[in-house]
Image (cartoon, rainbow, N blue to C red; front, side, top):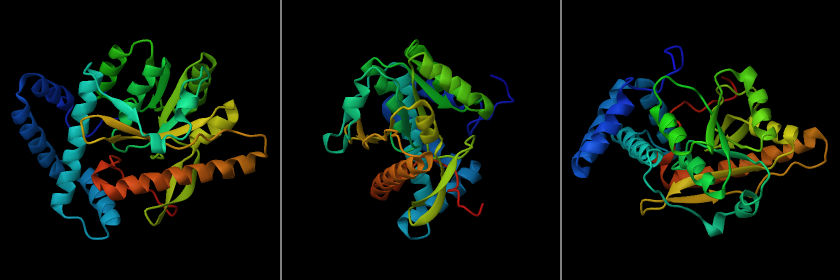
Amino acid sequence: MTDSHPRNPGPSWGFALIRFFNRWTPEPIFGFLLHLGATVAVPLLPARARASRNFLSTVMDRPAAWADVRRHFIAFADFLVLRFRTAGGRPHQCVLDPEKAGDFMERVSGADPLLFGTFHLGHSDLLGFWLTDFDRSIRMVRVRTGNSDDLKWLHQRYSGKVDFIWANDPADIPFSIRDAIENGHSVAMKCDRTEFSSRTAIFDFLGLKCVFPVTIYHLSLLFRLPVILAFGLDDGFGGTRIVSLPAFVPGASERSEELERAHLHFQRALRLAEDIIRGDPCQWFNFEPLKHPTE
């Protein structure tokens, strides 16, 4: 990776430092240092802090205080360490919520490729780990960054089952996805940021009109593959609870009708995300401003 790639917020050595203290520092001390670092990060990352404050204010129906933003940063730091530990080989339990399972097991237990979508919400970044339990080979659409060692650790742990399709060059994505699908791989992507997405639509979210990417549905219609939208949530016991919608399955109607049906499916996913967020706003880890139609 070169410095020309986008970077995650923070210093280039940030991930390595977290990993070092995680490995060599007793848990209580590590937790204190981690939360101290997250607190210091609030003024050092003003764009992320501003996005957090605006988002939390929208959800809580009151102006978010500095303490709210700090709590949001700490929640993300805690999850970041969980992701590092899982990528590094620590066992992690994921369980499908039987009351919000949709047709997930029926679809994922089959042999055909699928399109998996999720948001920067809760433990959703761990879904790719869990999908390998079903003997699926996953290609994750990710932005190549200059300081994201967790992707390297993930690839090392799941070599042969998990690889990446880099979204930095949008012109190459359709060809990379086509090659992945033709070789029997399922494709997973985040569906809550419009960066690098040429297909967007307007939806209701948290009482606002917001723009979200719908590329996954255009891929579904192009390759005739089902779309599964799922989220991973903290189960309160150190594991992850998976919730999922029934799959969107492309039909034989006119393309405009199929896209209308796809957008209704995505709107249902946003309503599910709203329920989760209103229960705990700090589980929304998309530290970017919500995109509105006028922008």
